[in-house]
Amino acid sequence: MADWREDVVVFESDQLLIVTSLQRPGAIARCLSLGELVCDALTEMFGEPPADRKRKALLLYLFSTKEEYLARSGTRFRNEPFLDQTAGHYDTKANLSRIFLPRGEEGFASVRGTYVHELTHHWIQERCPTFEGRQEDHLRSDLAGYWVVEGMATFVESFEFDTRARTWESDVMSAQALDVLANSAAGSRLTWKTVFGMNSDVLYGTGLSGSLTVGSSWTLGLRRKLTAQHLFYLQAAAACHYLYHADGGEHRPALIDFMTSFYTEDTFGLDFALAFGRGAEEVGKAVEAYARERVNGD
Image 1 (cartoon, rainbow, N blue to C red):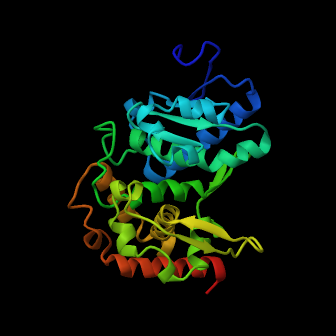
Image 2 (image 1 turned 90 degrees about the horizontal axis):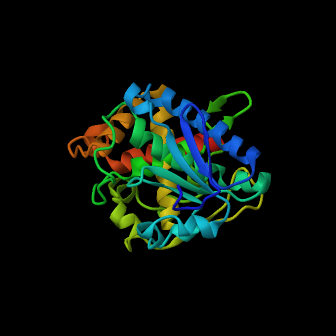
């Protein structure tokens, strides 16, 4: 920590450790409170982490300026083309999350989703009890099925967390992922074969291009311009919404098994049709129908 700056302070809760130079106790307390609730939600979803993996707190570096956040993100992150568009990331090699926290209530609200998203990545890779834990400092970039990594984090990002009541709701019909699917034509989005077969090399390389402008069922006059990468995240999240909640949770075990297969690099378990009993396009059509039914009542 001394190689960052000398005025950093450390705040610890049951599951989290925040290192920061912020002199804003309220903002730090909100981060700890929300982070603990996210960890509780993930524990309910996936099960209690083994004691040896829960003993070490999840580490978050919290920055007061975007410039400092970018400067402290490490060479391999500074060279990535999308880093300057982010407010945070989970660094698998360093095993910590970095978040830029703007001032004020609106500032916290603007990065709340990012915080939940990156903490989900961190918790799953470090604590998820369905596999033994981090075997390497990164996930294979050529492994198909990457949708389940970003889809799960974007799905959890959409939860409604109430830090006062210490409750959360995962079945949120106003989730952006469902809204986008309900308000866009299938031909204008990525094909489901593309989404479910994607690896991170293609996603973050030059394999995707184009954009889509789409309205909303929840905000009058809203028109969102989404890149192909954004569509991947949202379609993957919509798939997780469907597989986790549809048909009384019937598909939930298959979703968790598929996620486990990705993190353990089990290529047999990543055979999509075998995992879900249907091909990519058939599952995709079911996801679309689920989104329309949840958002528009169709």
